[in-house]
Image (cartoon, rainbow, N blue to C red; front, top):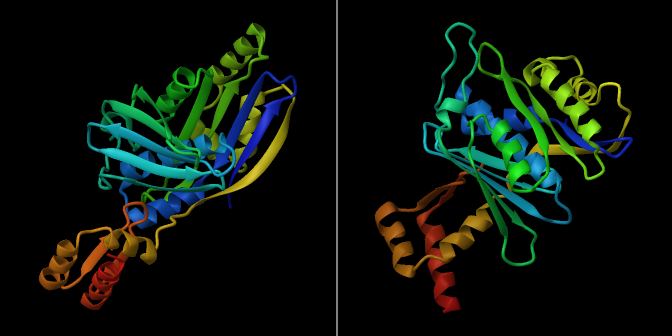
Length: 293
């Protein structure tokens, strides 16, 4: 079961989230049939949005748009405070690895662009904040967003590890943030620890990577766990929702679909689920629209 653990240093100087998102990324890969680089990039985006949503309260939703100008195109995801996330990558077929090591490459294929966070508090106009993509590795771009846009010094590590058949072995990461009570000495100590900690990819291969991440972050400093919550890939699309979308179309468009296309096929971008509406279904929608006019 995927999960996020929220923790805080006993002295109140830092807080950290650590995540296991293995099943989330496995489901995303299966639904979108992504190749290696696309799997890792999409996975990192989903993990980042889980963290963003975990920072919110109530029924808020967070849309993360990583808008690059290279091979991946855009990575779009939506997460909520109940631990649900859904998302997709425009180009599912990027599959580039280093010849010598087999390392899956991501950054060069994100390109330049924007890291856009849209937070919907359910109270009217959503709040949008944007920072530039600085490396394309997503974790670094996320840390830059947190530091620059939210004015909170942050360290982030995200990764997705694949086997030799490009199936997901493990996915997860961490976010560490300085709190207002952190002294200069606290910040220096944690900076040194993060700079010298093992790579996230190595920590994720530990038998218990959640504990390995926490140990690497806090070292000898005492900390306490605040909460542990489950995470998952979940798309809330439905046939009824797409029927309502069809109802919003002009009557002549619906008539054209019925007479020329003999139906309508709609695919959800977020989960790749297909919904078919037959000629009879469209006729029913046209009649419903006529009655409501």
